[in-house]
Image (tube, rainbow, N blue to C red; front, side, top):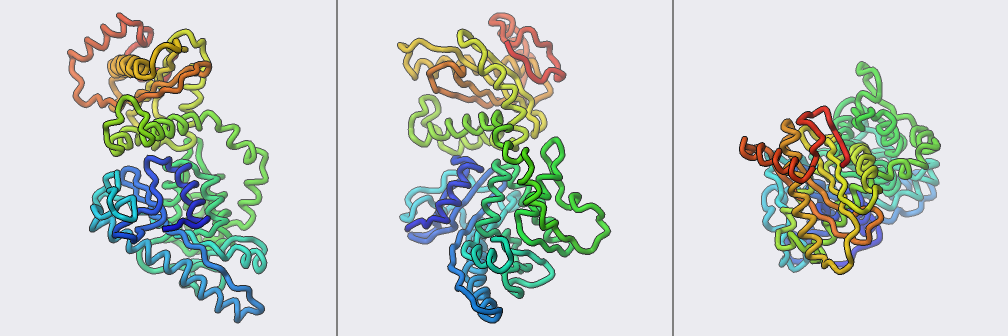
Length: 441
């Protein structure tokens, strides 16, 4: 089945934000029957997207506008909601029927969480009203007013019955993915948005104003409670500042945001490189494993929000550009997840005569040593994810990872870890303490 321009745009944005290992375009549940436009499975969070592009008829007067609005709302919004609810029902009751191809010959590669543990996020993308909104309202955004029902008022979205569905048009979608480009950040926004909409009555001139309100209210740790962003909990009605988006995006910091956060994208690049190597069959060690195993292992790193990735990236960048003649390492505590430690190993320039297979085997063995020593040095951490990558001046591109849990750590393992640290000078200057977050050797 063909993919239109808006669906392809959604798929591109989804892959950039959720990364390709967890985001799948146009899955099927029966021969030739699409489940949805994009399905994202990230741990217990399941995001289901429906994307529809429906033309909005030009109108001479308010009467024609209401007729055109009712038609557009029915086809762009209500039919998306119907598709999303059908997809949710399939995911809950018949997950084994979901496949990646129209011939249902390629099973969906990730395990779907049990309904009792899953958090479902239904998202309807409704294109086609932007030009009419711009002409009639002065901006290309749909208005929202939870005091009205459905399509009761032209160019305004009211509340809809049934499972909560997030409704965005093209303008809102662009603002959403521009502002929140990690899985953790976007899921957090959707959760806060749902809670806000299900609370006090609310109105806004455009989704992007709510996004700006959310982003400007973020605490230093990157977290935000939307309800708190509106001040007094005693008010019975919430009205979003209609100038919030214009004000926020007009700040110099906004245009420099991606440049400022550049170290954070090092984390994205590592995850996407490993994913690409696997999907293209180029992963030397681990290619025989199912994609679900790699997704489960890398989920820890991918669950970091943009601010968390920035803090991680800053520390990795310090050793990434050190002299390329030796190994460098840094241990970084997760900013977002308790009891998680990342061990980054930067390997030196390597003789061109050494094969990729031999190189990868060597860096994996070295990485396992560093992770094992770190498990002895940092006893209050449970999860250790090691990532090996080349020095910034190196010409090789091989990367590797290993995941280890400390839940079965023994005294014998502790002694062996200490011996290895002393024998090979791995983290040998770091005492066993949680006060040390990072150190380079």
